[in-house]
Image 1 (cartoon, rainbow, N blue to C red):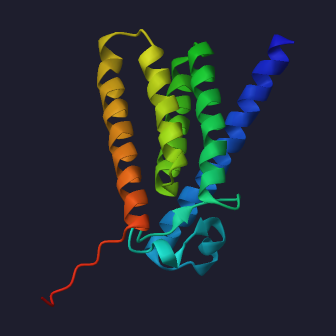
Image 2: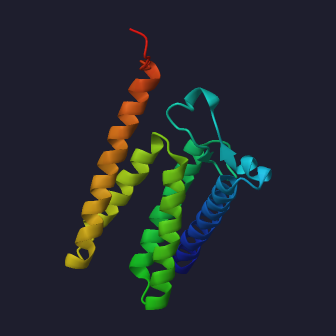
Length: 168
């Protein structure tokens, strides 16, 4: 029964990583400007273009918010597998996979990203590995605070848009 649960957690991580990779590849291809098919995997709202001037990753899901929520499952499962893994090479692979999920979630940029980053920060803070992880703990907490602040500012900006003009 424990093995079956571990397999399910690994499956969630692999699916989330695959969806994140599809989103990242689509975003990079779009930024290179050569592949119009990538817009199927990206989400762009012209009304929010002044706040978010780039398309956000939605990958194979309908909205970036759905993508981030699903990515959070992948993040939690990846961190859980990382705790159980003994092999150093597999740990490096898992860390890279978690990094891909985090990058894709950050490019999806949504208010739900704050919950994602909060969960990541809490997972890092709960680890007791000492000094090597201290930098990542501080960086994750600062990045979460930055995203939270930017989400509050952009939300207020959407409600009360600031118009800058040269006319007196």
